[in-house]
Length: 116
Length: 113
Image (cartoon, rainbow over all chains, first blue to last red; front, side, top):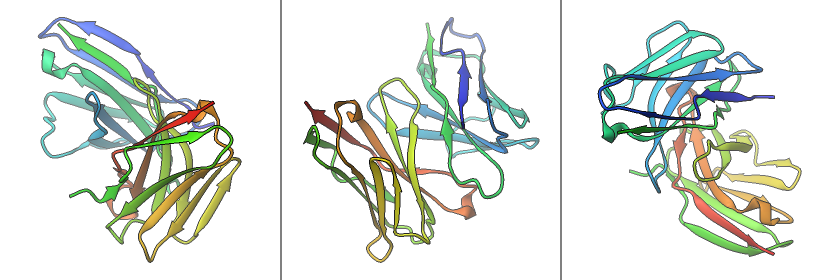
C-alpha cells in the first residue's frame, strides 16, 4: 500500500514552454501533497504544500506564478512549470500524506525535467 | 540553521554486521520522526517512523530508537545487506506546520560483501 506515482518520469522541453507533472496517490486518499525539488548532490527542497481543494502554500523564494500547483482531488495534484527556462531543469518529486492521524509522507519516483 | 542533523556523511559496514545511523535534532516541538532510504534519481522510500511518545519501533531488520532528552534518534539495520547501500535521510515533523518534513542532509551507507 501507500503507492505514489508521477507522470511523466522524464521530460525534455524547449525554453519558454510549459510543462505539467502529475502526482497520484494510487491506493489512499491524500489530503495533503507536497512538491519538492532536488538539485544535484543536495537534499530535497520543499517547494510547496497543497491541501485538497485549497490554494497551495509556497515556501519562501518559490515563485507561485512560475510553479502552478493544483490539488483538485484527493488522489491527484499537478505541478505546472510555466515558461520553463534552463535553470528550471531539475528533479521534481512529489509526496502524499493521508488525512488526520496520518503523519507519514510517501514519495513518488520523481520527474526529471530538462529544459533546452 | 539545521534543525535536523546527520553528522556522518558516510558509513561503511561489512555485510552481516549492524549499521547504526544517527540523527540529532534541535526543535523540541518535533513529535514524529521518519527514516527514508534514497537512491540517486529516485524518490525517497519510507522505511520506518517513530512517534515522540515511544522510544523504540521495530520493523524487521530495521529498528529506530528515540532519546527525547538527548534529542537524538538512531536507525539500526541488522543484519546489513549489500542491497541496503543507499543514502539514508532522517526527517522530523510536528503537527503545527502541516507535517512538513524537516530533513537531515543524509548519510551514505555502503554495505560491503
